[in-house]
Amino acid sequence: AQSVTQLGSHVSVSEGALVLLRCNYSSSVPPYLFWYVQYPNQGLQLLLKYTTGATLVKGINGFEAEFKKSETSFHLTKPSAHMSDAAEYFCAVSDPDFGNEKLTFGTGTRLTIIP
Amino acid sequence: DAGITQSPRYKITETGRQVTLMCHQTWSHSYMFWYRQDLGHGLRLIYYSAAADITDKGEVPDGYVVSRSKTENFPLTLESATRSQTSVYFCASRLRTTGYNEQFFGPGTRLTVL
Image (cartoon, rainbow over all chains, first blue to last red; front, side):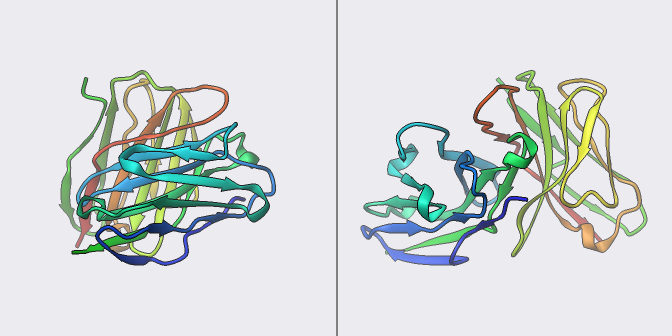
């Protein structure tokens, strides 16, 4: 079964600084990869996704992520953090063992922006 | 366009009571999912459904029952609630397509079992 590891349950960055949230997955078969964002008391919203093609994926709100098959990673970045980026971020990966029907989520990273 | 809705948004119940959480989507998505979100665990899949009358267990199905008689509805029932089922529950849906499987999430139901 697929597993997803998000390094760092809490990340703090200064406003204007680089945001880097890490995600690694276990499958040797390239899955479909997603980053979701959750604002307080809300459901999850899709930030970006990788399916096929270009390995650098751009999403909403200036975020991007790069799929690196050799490292089984899909790290999320943003060049300059804004206060509005404060939220919880989840990496999710499809499970090829189940025909990609299901997603496996990481445990989440809470991003705090320091003014 | 209502999308995907959940009701109630907040629920307090007592141990041993039966509770049903409702999920409704207006997109005619084939797939629907139920997750629970707990600190330190992220989202864990409880049950999912590929179509009406087709359901399957996820990672943590014990203590939960689902049904799907209509495409748009996917209720989750806790037959005899326990304190360990205190959690935030999210419903999600997606289209049946080949390839990627982006899921759309409801706003969640916060359940407290006393």
